[in-house]
Length: 141
Image 1: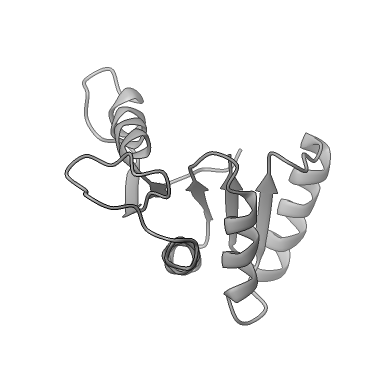
Image 2: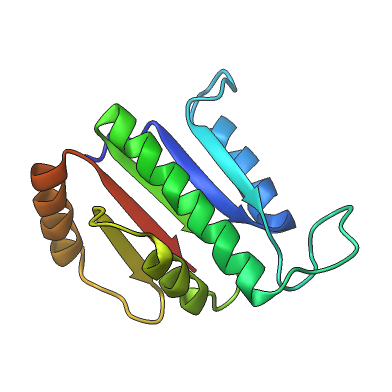
């Protein structure tokens, strides 16, 4: 069990809606049980009240910022943080963003383009958690 206390999301209109639904869907009394840090970004111009779409580098830098926030959250709580980078075919953004994170941080990047088995993921997670005391998992759609 990962014992999540929060999640970070970077994305547009659909991401914001999904994050809000997730935040409140975990409790029958509709109380927020999961803290979600949101970083707004859209490459395909689908965010409400936003006239323009941002470019690739802005997406990478915003994603990097959110990953660093996830690392700080996980480190401060000695737990696992999940940074979910929404967007169609955005694995390249996740790879660029995680490569910009300096230092020897306990990061696992999951890409839909390159799936790994559940056993490999949990084994790697356990190794990093034992070594560092915390882990940040970056998930790209």
